Image (cartoon, rainbow, N blue to C red; front, side, top):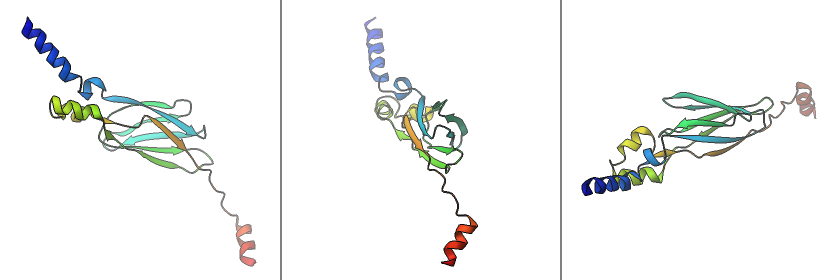
Length: 141
């Protein structure tokens, strides 16, 4: 009986550092988009398209991974914008790896990685092209 309690206690202490258990293998990303008409698609190498977001639907749940997420945003009258969301190693993944299995489980499941959770994307207005008449009058002077 004492052995069972001791074993369970030791396991509980060790598993508290494992990112697969404490942090999970997915996370929710929240976006603030400007202008409100902006639509973005999220892709990741090896996974293809992860989904899309807009001002009306500005959160997405993604699996954690070592690879970065590429965000491509568009809106009429604005320049397209591509942003990279960098994957970084979380503290729980490193600590759990030291105690349990050298981080192999967290690395395989992606739990040892995380992304920034609050992302702001602001598009720049498209600059109007100079008309042919404006270009000619500028050249004539």
